[in-house]
Image (tube, rainbow, N blue to C red; front, top):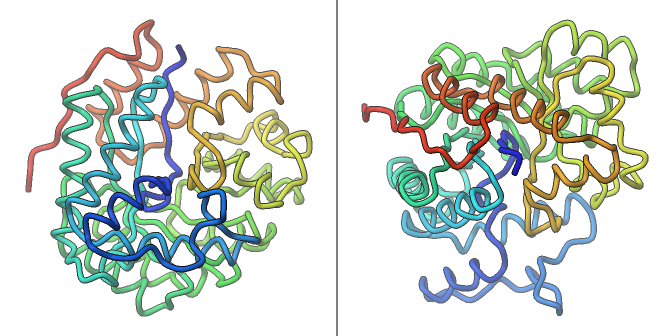
Length: 335
């Protein structure tokens, strides 16, 4: 079994309809109208509709216990398929909308991480994400809170949401996060083209989430390779949402062949019928990548991870070794 690692998955977006239903019943709330299709799957017709459906599902998640359950169940499922490390992108704005404080939000996620490590040997950390379509002030508030309230599991700051909202206007938020020692990433180059990537690269980032439309600009592809920028790609979500018409049209093999560092992520798994292990299989089936290619993807993810160096060394040993189930003990000391 190939050890896998994931840097691009949205925590609220990992909860399948069945889990959202269980949480709703526990919290005594009705499932939002229009969230599910007749077949019980999440219902959306395009990317913007997907964002709306995501917000509806997130509105059901109300307590620290809910976040614990979502975190634990996702990490357990990844570990079952050989996963050893995940960076979970979490949205304080979605938690705040249902009345959760940052401390409650973090506590629920941290409990899920701790219990998944105990039971399944998988490690995880948290990326705090601003939602660009919530506005500049909201994103700066998220960055400021993360900077002022450090948590041992919060290792990075991300920008997600509607990519039509240009990343450059969030420069102050990224400065706040970077000055506080948080590593940074940004969604770019999915729904907008190379110009959005160039704008994102003016921010203090070492990674891009998606970034695949860089393929439209060979000069930009060379720059990504020369600057050692890692692209956290999600082929299945790209195809399901119509960014590319098929896996045969997906540029991931060409980006990798050009020397760009790439990783694999499931993005929002139940929305797109994806899993982390499934993304590795997509690359095996459609791109012809063998075990060595796939192991290199895992190593690239660990090398680009925002975790501390002792954990990185332990994860690299697992990625290179014969037994990815060997368990490091890397719980950070609480602040």
